[in-house]
Picture 1 (cartoon, rainbow, N blue to C red):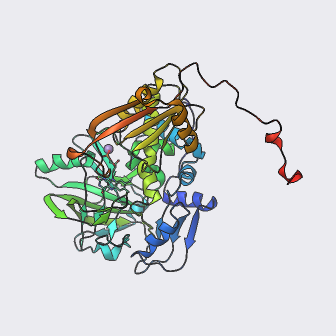
Picture 2: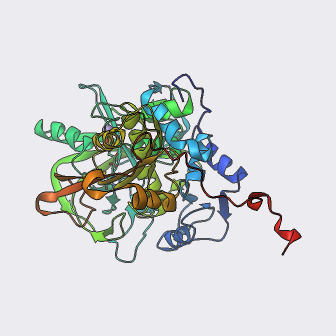
Picture 3: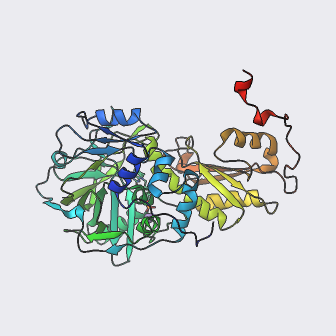
Length: 457
Ligand SMILES: Cc1cc2nc3c(=O)[nH]c(=O)nc-3n(C[C@H](O)[C@H](O)[C@H](O)COP(=O)(O)O)c2cc1C
Ligand SMILES: [Mn+2]
């Protein structure tokens, strides 16, 4: 697939995405009134792999709630307008060909503007309470947009936010790009203005979750969205802070991260299902803007939807990183069992001996969270776990084909980390030696393929 390929345009906003999902039978409307405390999360869990759910009536709120829009690969493919097998390639193409957003004068997300000072977030929005042991309602799906206009840097990322009463929330910021911007603001004694954006299609949600070699500090993740949508994403200037947000989003919380203030938060169930508490920053809302008939978008921590949003961008990142070294790359899969983060299966058409090991090196360089990589030949589908296992069973010798790289930085959700938070990485080359490619015909039974069972049984 070359860069000149013209891909279809992804859904332009959440509403367009919902129409696509509904037409494909991947969205169900729920008319009965549902409670944002546990009930919506419980129904979403019961539909963990889809369909998406649109709750039209929500206890104590005028906002409908939508959830599970990325519950399956098929739903993301529908939103991108591509075949389900093309999601990684499509994403890799978008990463390589970002399209910068464009500022426009106004947009539906600012149809209503509320001042932040006297705002009671819990009264304004149907913020979901998810798990029994969670400390309370949490904003889990806000895309945080930060801009440093001096550096010319914009960044998108997700940060869980515990409601704290009034117009304040917690915000958990792990040491990545937002943290870097926060450090810069704090060392100058300034608050960091950020916008929290709710109600977004897959093209923004996956972009915001993308990390790794393809999106270094300074890379504007909204360029990925534009590439997926084949247009410049329209942005509007926030009303109270120097940050721009997608004009077609549903709801925006404008505000700032207060310098020097830390508070306890949690417990909150992480994406592996274990409760944890982290020191949190404080986010103070300066304005709430929304569409007049805004939908609230929910997300349950640990749901298939979260793993897909968080993890499927890794396939695009790895695709690009490995193909830069090995043009014979066929396909990449990040598995569900590896939480779409820690495990990748890579299939290659080998052109040289050594390609298998080089694919391993490229994969680890492409995405830091990766812990185990398996490389198979191009005739083994990474989507077929039995075929992958068979390749390991019959092509691989550990002393020759396995490499252990000890002591890299681990991800805290990997509960097996050694002291200092470091992890071992393992690569397995389960490809056949070049030239031994399996030309020997497999045993066939004449007639089996064309047997019409109803003639016989
Ligand atoms: C639903 C969801 C929730 C997340 N929650 C947090 C969080 O609470 N704190 C955090 O630092 N990262 C969280 N992340 C991870 C970051 O958003 C993600 O790694 C992002 O790509 C980082 O962006 P950056 O590379 O621009 O720093 C979450 C990701 C998703 C998809
Ligand atoms: Mn970033």
